[in-house]
Image 1 (cartoon, rainbow, N blue to C red):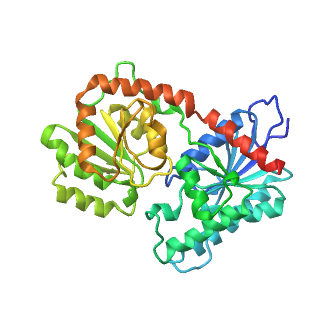
Image 2 (cartoon, rainbow, N blue to C red):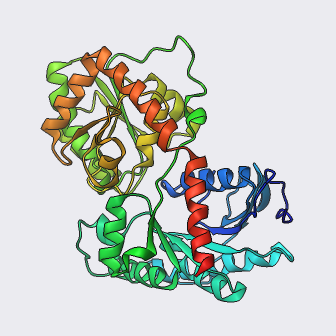
Image 3 (cartoon, one colour):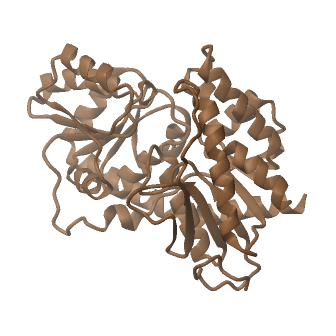
Length: 400
C-alpha cells in the first residue's frame, strides 16, 4: 500500500492510484455542481483505497490544509496581482499559479494522474502535467458554447471556449458526464471519439435522505426548484407555469432557491406573471436546510434549457421528491425509459404546468415515481460506481 498523502484512506487489496484533483470549488466553497461532484468522487475513491489530494481555493470556514474522510484538501488563498476587473480569463489564469504552488506542500508524495475539473483550472493542470511528468485527465462539466445555445457571442464566451479547446487538446483523456455531453465535446473541439469517456455524476443517497422521518409527509402542493440562477437554468419557465397551475390549484406554491446573475430578471418575470404571492425566491440555502426543504416538497422541478447532466435531479430523487425535469441534454438520459421521473419539453411552460398538476394531484403516481427513482439511484448513480469507472479512465491514460 502506498503512503497516504497526510491522511488514511481505506485499505486496498489492489494497486491503488494516486490522484491530484484540481477544482475551482470544493465544499463548503460551492458555486455550482462541480463542488458536489469532486467531493463525492474524491471521497469514494479514497474509501476504495486510492490516494486523493484535492487542490482548490481558500474558504474562511476551512483550514487551508485538512484531511476530510481520508481526502487531503489543500486550499490556495489567491491574492491576485492587480488586473483589470473585466479580465476574468486573465484573473483565473493568474490564480492558477497559486494552485500550482500548493504542490510544494506534498513533500515526496507524487500523483500518478492529475485530474482537472473544467476550464477554470486548465493552466494549473497543464503545468503540473509537465512538472510531474504524469498524464492529465480533464472533466468537461459544461461548455461555453452549450451555455449559449450552440453559438458563441463575441468577447468572454469566445475566450473561455478557447481555453476549453486548449484543455481538451492538452489532456490525455477527457471525461464527460452524459452521452449528450460526449457528443457536444467531440463535435465542439474536434476530438477523436476514443479520447472522450462517459462517466456519469453520482449522488450520496444516504446524505440526502438521512433526515427524513419515517412518518414524514410533504407539504400540500409545494413545488421546489434550486440551483444557480442563470438564464439557461430555466427558472423563468417555471414562474410562467406557476401562473397556470394556480388557476387549477389555487393552494399551490413554489420555492426557488439559489443565487446568480439572472436573479433580477427572474424577479421581474415573477412580477409580470403575477405570481409573487406564491413563488418565493429563497436565495442561498445551506445544504441541511435544502435537504429539509426537498423532503417537504410535493415535487421538485429541474426546468433547465441547457443541462449537461443535472446532478440536482439526482439530489431531488434521493431526497424522495417526485421529480419533473426538462427533456434536455443529460437530464433526459437520467430517466428516459424508466418510471423515475416526468419529462416535459424544455422552455414550454404550458406542458410543465400540465405535468405539475398531474404530479401534485395524483399521490399514487407520486409514490411510484419515488420507488422507481430510489431503485434507479441505487443501481446506477452511486459514487462508488462512478469512482470505479473514473479509475478505469486513469488506468487507460497511464497505459498509453
